[in-house]
Image 1 (cartoon, rainbow over the protein chains, first blue to last red):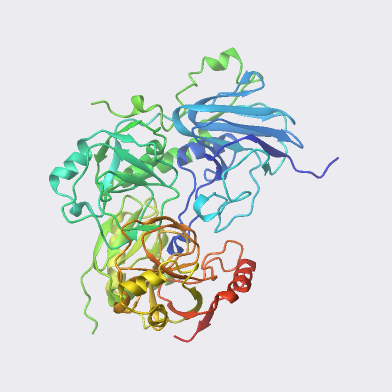
Image 2: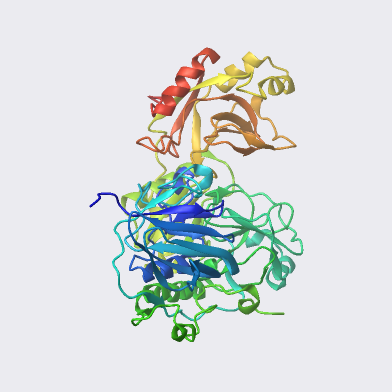
Length: 348
Length: 242
């Protein structure tokens, strides 16, 4: 017998792989942004598969590949979010299923095919020391646990308990959202005339390569300010769309500054934040304005969707996810809050 | 009677709103922001998550599943009308600064622009008691009002891509204390070993919006010891009566 707790060893990772949970709240008044998962629905889906709370910490895997192995015991994990190929040895592991890694086995995850972020949730939970109630990595603030930075090879993610043998599970994916990304205009839409607001709403935007967890820059037609490009700094929510002096939108995301001084033409509806964040570099985005009531209705539906995820988890019969039967279950590609941009952005 | 002054409440997406008291940098306006902030922490409305006091507005994050915008706006309007601006700062931080040289890259240049000696810039910068208008943008970055107008210096034409943690800066009529290395277009007069943000210290943050700040010059020879003390989690700055 050994007292050692099982852990996941990181065998391969990169700057886009980090531990994230529902975010760090209560210190925005001190300039500390919440960080947290870029796609909360995908995080919640991965957590539902391993029986964890929707906002529990998981490994956020960005566009690029990563590999993890189980040490000091078996570890059960689940992947959910952006569609990608994953394998244990030569066995494929579908996104949207659990898999029990025997001690020494590796899960290797390829680059995302559609979308950006896939969450690797762990049965028994990731252990760490929360700061302001969260393990989320905030890169610029050197915060996060167990490592205050993106993961790299050799890192150890200690797991709450070893995984018992038993049937695997899959998530019956909720219907994928489609259509333009909904926004609520303001708070500084009065810094733009009608023609420029129309241009913002009617144009197709492309996610620029200089985008990260802090924010996505969008390429498209330049917008003109009617009253200058500076406001006295005020607060910045997740999904705020700033228009700086160059006229191109900058959408502020999980690792944003808490305050800023450029006019915000609109803010993305909470229900569509994950879908927006899942847009790959070069992907196309359109926006549609909705009223505050409609956005808050959507927020309630979205919360209900997250609450309903555990009810969508199905236990697989004696076989496992690699069985032929499962491959007929219409799994691949449907499990996302964001599919590839072609399928969920309205085409012009 | 305190006649309620005008303000407006703007939705900022579906989970935040801004109670905007004006659009200028003004201590009276900021005092009203802080008064509402204090009222909300004392009696948080349903769905309240957290608030960010800024120069001219109180930014409120809330849970739209617990309360609707219209209802929260109604409650905040009542609260804003009922609360009185707070008295002056309750506490003042006395912060050590090594001015000039490798610590204050722009001290000589700022002195030259204003036709002063570097010592005169230091004297003018360390004379006033500053008001902490807000902490924002980056963790622990303190935006200060109260700079001697004779030191007002427009921002650099070419912002630097990296400026050091602890930089003591001025930009336009504002002054600032930077906590983490970051890009900046402000002028660096000196550097403090004090860390407003230290993840392994209790408390993690020290300066709060509404506090007062004073600077005092320390010799460069003191830097290594002060920096080590700050790294260990010692405050380095002291609290004095405002």
